[in-house]
Amino acid sequence: MVSIGSIAARVRFSYCSASSHHHSPSAQATLHRTLRFITKVRLKWVKNRGLDHIIDRDTDIKAAALLIDLIARSPSSSPIPARSLSHLQRNLGLTVPVLRFLRRYPTLFIETPHPRYPSLPSFSLAAAAVLLRRRELDLYSADSSAAASRLARLLMMSRSRSLPFRALAPLRYDLGLPSTFATSLVPSRPDLFRIVARGDQHRLTLVDWPSDLAVSALQLRHADSISNPSYRDFKRGAFSSATPLTFNMSFPRGYGAQKKVKAWMEEFHRLPYFSPYEDCSGIDPESELMEKRTVGVLHEILSLMIHKKTKRNYIRSLREELGLPERFTRIFTRYPGIFYLSMKCKTTTVMLREGYQRGKLVDPHPITLLRDKLFYVMRTGILYRGKGMTKLVLDEDDLDRLGNEGHGEEGLEGGNEGYDEDEDEEGECYEVEDDESESESDSDED
Picture 1 (cartoon, rainbow, N blue to C red):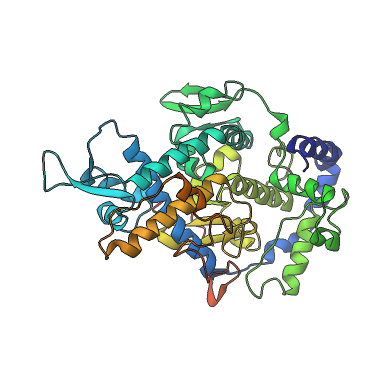
Picture 2: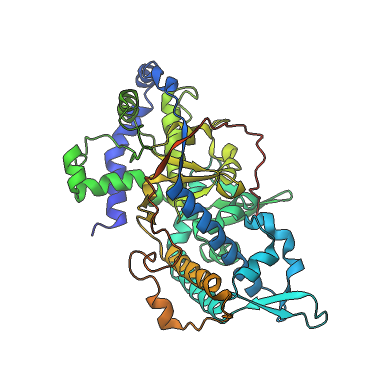
C-alpha cells in the first residue's frame, strides 16, 4: 500500500516543472488560441433512473440523520413537540410535513403524548436511533484527522484561504463533519484553523498552508495508477508519468460513441491540468484552460464529499470565494461524462459519476456505511408499521452484521437492487437552463 504522504511528495515533484510551464505567457498565448471548437459542442441532459434513485433515498436518510441529531442534542429531556420541528421541512429537504415523516419511521422516532398537552404529538428517540447515534459519534471521533483534512482542502481552494461559516454549515453533512464541528473539530486543530470575526460574520481561516494536502484527488489517483497500474491503466497507457491527467468519463448512453464527443474529450484532456490548489491568476478567464480548471475545482469539491455529491446551490454559495465563473453551473451539463445533475426531491443535486458503480459508492466512507444501516432501520419501520411493530431490538452485534456485504448495501431492503447508474432513460433529454436567479428549495443551513 502506497502512503498518501509518499504519493503527495511524488506528485508535487512531478508537477512542479509542469506548473512553471503552465504559467508561461507564451505557452498560454498558444494554448488560448487552440480548441475553440470545444465551446460549440452542446450535449443535452439525460435523466438517469439509477442515480436519481440514490439521491431520492439519500434525501430521506439525511433528513432522518439530522432529526436524530437535533432531538439528541435537545437540552430538554422531555419529548420534543412535532410543531417545534415543523418549520424545518424545507431545511431538511422534505417534500412531506415533518410530522408525517416522523410517524413514517417508528423504529427511529417514538411518538408520545406531551407531558402538559396530551393532544400535542411529541417525539423522542427509539433505542435503535440512540444506538446509531452513539456509533455515529464514535465514527466522527475516529475520523477527526481525515475530516480536518477535507475541511482544510476546501479552505485551500478559496481565494482568501477562508470561508464563512454560513457557507460551510450546509456542507457539513456532505463533508462528513459533526454538527458541532465549529466547537469540537476546529478548536482541536489550532495548527490548521482559526475563527475570525469580521463584522457580524464569522469565518474559518487557515492558520498555515499545509503543503502535504495541496494535491488533488485526480493527481493522487494518477500517481497511484503509476505505482500500481490496473489492467485498464495498462491498456490505455496511463501508468507513465508522461501520460496527461484525465478525468474518468462515463457518458450517458449514446454520447460516448459520437465522433465529435470523442474528439472533444481527446482535445480537452490534452490541455494542461491546473490543480485546484494552484494560483490561477495568470489564466485568461475566457480560455479553455480556465474552463478545464473550473472542471477540476468542481471535481475536487465533489471528491471531498463523502457521498460524492451535494446540492448545486451549496456550491453556488461559494462561487466568489472559489473564484468560479459567474455561470459556472453550466459545466455540470456540458460535461455529462464527469458530472450528473439530478432534479429529484424539488432541488438540484450534482453528483460525481465516477464515485458510483452499480448503484453503490466505489469507495464508501465508514460514515456512509453507517448511514446505509440507518436506512435499513428506516425501511424496517415502513415494512412492519402496518403489522403493529413499533420497536426494533438492535444491539451492537446486530449493527455490525447489518450490511457488511457489498459496502453496506447488500441485504438492505429497499436499497438499490435493480438500479444501475448507467441506466439512462431514452427520450428523457432536455436542455438545462443555468439561470443564476433560479429559485430552489436548497436552504442555507441544515
